Length: 284
Image (cartoon, rainbow, N blue to C red; front, top):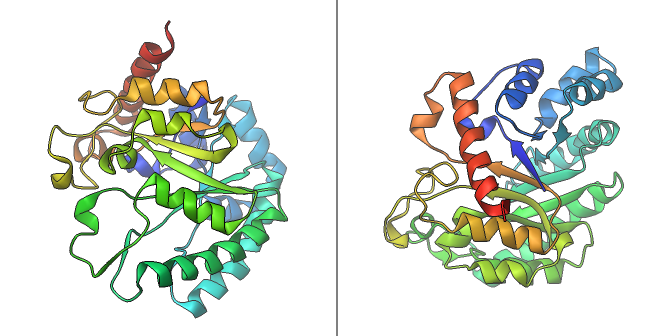
């Protein structure tokens, strides 16, 4: 398990070299990459040069976001699947084997059963392709109630439902993107993590929440890890360690204050909060 940074999650847009410098400044051990950027870099530079650059900063690659939505229109989805193979070739060369995406927790057109079948078909197509490149993909359930209450049909929004989806998917290169916010918002518990195996989880997001009733939580109004103490992040991290999860743990605060800070301060603050909660979880 290692402390990882996603610059997209804290609204920083800069060069790969600057991202690497900032990651070290914030005491992170890993970094997410934009597969679209890496693919563009690879047109002008050898991929080995990019991998060597990341290695020279002694950083691991955390993962990369699937660069399209799983539920988009059929023609667009098929076009993106074709492009995905080119991205996977580059990802394999830099050893970026963790991919992640999310599942929209509602539909205004498809019932739960219909949407389940639709997502299974799409996910199988993605998983069979990425399997050729030794990649694994983590699916994130979105537990924030305010996102789904005004829509006609609910869809997967908690860990139990996601596990049922993965069971039906029957692909060994799939798993969970586990987000502390969404586990909390969906009334999940630390004990639920203890029922999982290490390879069930592909990727982890860690955030804190405001002190509000869960039904009033706004998805993009979160806090840095340990900033409020509302979510039991010490128990969350200890449970991950207990099941021997060995992947990235990435802050995803979606916080306006953090987003508006200068880059260096934002990274130091984000890394500092994560390191502090890390120390509390693992000091004993």
